[in-house]
Length: 337
Image 1 (tube, rainbow, N blue to C red):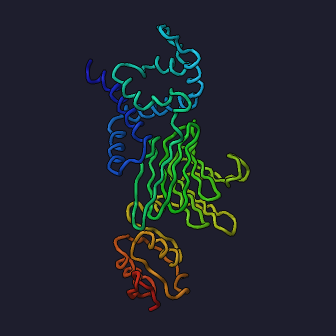
Image 2: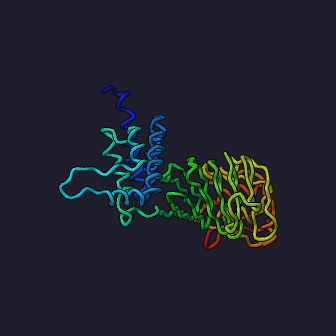
Image 3: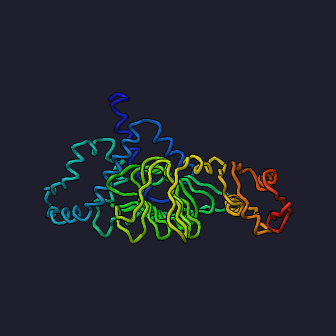
């Protein structure tokens, strides 16, 4: 067999092995980078991973049916008659999934799907959290990529029919792998952000929620609303929805890359009050900054802040605003000049 003939089987086997690893628990950052590199190394790798994930999802959806069929048609002791294959297994077999060289690797990732119901794996649940000044990139089991900002808490739950992310606090950018059979839902407090195959940012701090879309579309609704209900709000590329504890939701046009800039160590502001800026900086740095005069917190800031270190940041801000800094027990205190 030539290299070109063997490559698709190799991609299939590697895809199943990656699926088993990603479904089994948290990957380290280095392992996630290796997975990203493998996905981008060849078109057949991404195709093989998508096909393997689709197959696993189909088995998940029909696991009880398959297990019951296998149990009811199990051969009598001493008999060599085999139980007829479930239609899904027959269909996938016809596509070559059980060809030599791929079967063993697929078994590693898919064996659980044909076990009796008591042995079928539960929903995959993973927790992620970042500390002050810490960013993390996570590759989920479906191939979606999540960038976590500082002080962010995520809980990821994957089931056969749904992919759900609970954002308890913080900010994250989601680059979602398309899967029309399993919606991708981010729950932030009382609101649901339903993806339609896209890249978007969700920020939740206290009662305030901001959703910014860079690509595709998302639907934002309350936890009590059904998808597509009259109360749901649909966002497209370049739109931001801001929901606060009081007042109606605000939908505006924005440059999504400004919102995403925290990934590259910058924060972009347009007439934002100094108090909000300092709160953001305190999530990015261990050294904390306080504002002594409440009136200073209302000063508007427009510009780009480079997140190198808090003292350098405040030194540059003092050139833009009538403020000065003095050392404090926790870091810095801002005073009026």
